[in-house]
Length: 334
Image (tube, rainbow, N blue to C red; front, top):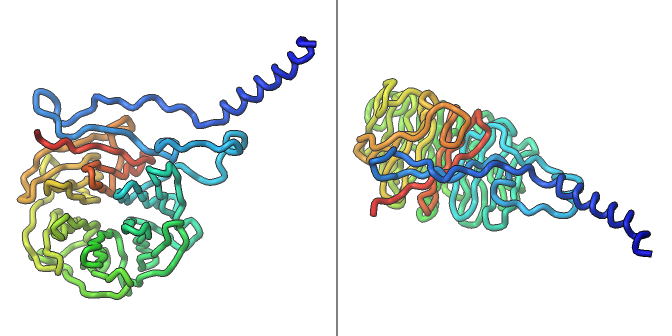
């Protein structure tokens, strides 16, 4: 009688092996020894990981997913913008024409805007309630979605092309860079346009194709003035404070700047697609460090664009042509 059960046991073993084979493809372990600058200088930036899909945030497969695979697209194609805060990572993917919203706590991925409501998502930000704001340049609008990815409404930017977004929830403001209008437009979170600042030119407070914007904890607004090859600082009402940067092909200069972010100590990070790196400056514009070079390996980049820094000083870079978000950690001086 025991021998009669052997075929059943054998079939069960084959079935279990089949299920395990249908799970996520194992990735090689991430290196834990990538730091910048190199010794003997004390480390300030540590490479953490790359995120290509929800497998990289620890997704747990259901029984049916192990059998049949996922019924949704989970892999980044060409991420351009990125935002990280409160355990959420929003990757604006121009290849997918959607935003991939990774929930690190729930280990879940939500697709936002894959229904044709946005055409070219260059940036996305998420408020404390989980609502997602997406800059859609060709549509001339900022699309607003619920935390579950359902389309709610849009803030229209008449005659403009929104490219970068920054939230100041304390003041109830959304700052939007307008590539065509060479200005920054400020909306209330109800969609009402409050005011704008800037015009085309190279004088203080003027812009030439502003690509991105960020706001620090004090409310200071940093605008990446891309074709003037500089960063400009403003108070929260748009009054000019200072500027730094110039065009060049070496460290400390800008060639094709794409994204901007600020850490908790006021250091300014700027990605440059021409250099395949991000550079770190102090508020006065003195270059402190550059991170990355051209390539597909951990810590390398190919056309980096958006950059974001969360409340724990983790740095997220949209690595366009490598199809991933690279994650680094800023290490504070002891």
